[in-house]
Image (spheres, rainbow, N blue to C red):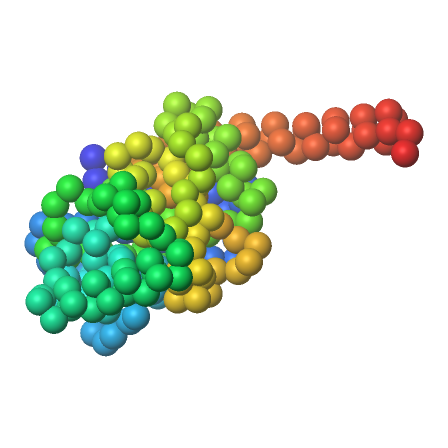
Length: 239
């Protein structure tokens, strides 16, 4: 039930095991605009730019037009573009093809939302009072390790390799498959300020309570195993 979904508790519990400089972000794809959040006003260069704003503490929703500046993000979010913006998409893709960044045959393999959203709700996990579609964690690799181990323990892990570009495809992929690790992409790192030593782990909202519960055991186990490995290294290493 939505009333039992308490983002504030989940964020605090996760932070007790995995301290991060960025707040986890919730993303929910809606069939109509929400009545309890403010509409985004302004302009951003990409869909993932909204992740940055949410991590800074803002809760808001966007409409399809807010995503028109991002050809790639509009594609992964299944947002139809105007004819003028479709031409920009073709130019952007040609630029990427010419650079050798992506091959044309790769495009149909990129995960997409099954249907266009009427609105997209963003916010920090701690402010969420209902279950989102996905939760994004921007973490260092050690934090990603703990989240993945917790997801596996909770039975909601995913055996796929870490995702790469475009970063935004990890959202529909997570909704379809489960917990996804993403190494990000250069555009996302510029637009969100993601550090060179950071990456993403994306969880389905419905899986988050199970993963957070498993984090308690995984965190304690890793502390014990770290001490065990340190002792063995000191005792058994000869070089």
